[in-house]
Length: 171
Image (cartoon, rainbow, N blue to C red; front, side, top):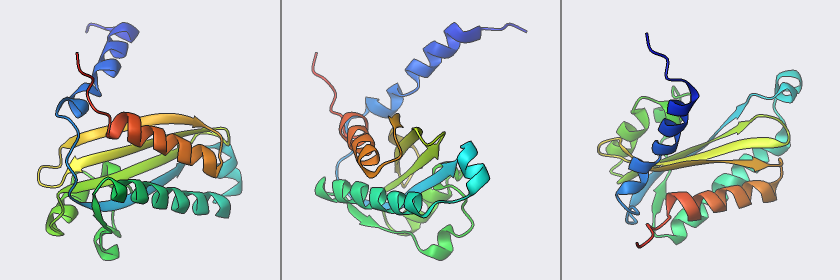
């Protein structure tokens, strides 16, 4: 068996986002907004459990993202609670998110994740998919430093402006 090692892994990691950016910015439309899934993989979370301030921060961030999407012309609807009750994480649901959005008559599925690595490092991402096909149209991830409202707003603002709705540069 041939081992390709880190150089090939690096090349593949750099090429991975290209298809998600190749087709241009998706036009505004209807979208089922699944919100953010919080994953706490920190030692602090394992020892102390869920923190109310973090739950409030996720809710604030969901509102921030929803407002940005609405200002861009997306009409957002939430999926019915009973439809998502059995889904642990909409971002990794094997197409259940797209099926729900399609059944709701939406053009798009939008969902994200926040992974708390430590109280200092958070990995945040957002995915915009075609509801009909389930294909990812745009997706991105950034690391933010800090566990504050401002850090979350800045991180998702950057992700929305510079990744999800980034216009292709003219050559």
